[in-house]
Length: 147
Image (cartoon, rainbow, N blue to C red):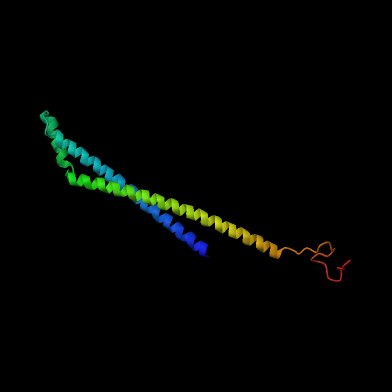
């Protein structure tokens, strides 16, 4: 029973690591998209300061006005969040791998234990040998004679 409870705990750890991994990957996708928008807005801010035809400059200013906050602080925050999520992914992968190794180890121990119990049960319930006597388990004691 102890092995089975340890197996269940290891499987729970593995599933929790998988959920954490999926959440971190989703967060990385969102942060990457936001980072791209911030970088585009930053480049638009720089290009609006250069000489350009009025039509192009107005278009860039409209894009810049419609973009979210373009502060460098937000870009640093997004970069830090990306690094944090990368670390979370790495630790979740290590945890999931360790959990799967533990699950495989416990399952092999359980299989070995079950097979040894099956062999022991078969030996206990096997008919006893009569070592050369003509007696079988179905014959009566009167039929068996020691020669």
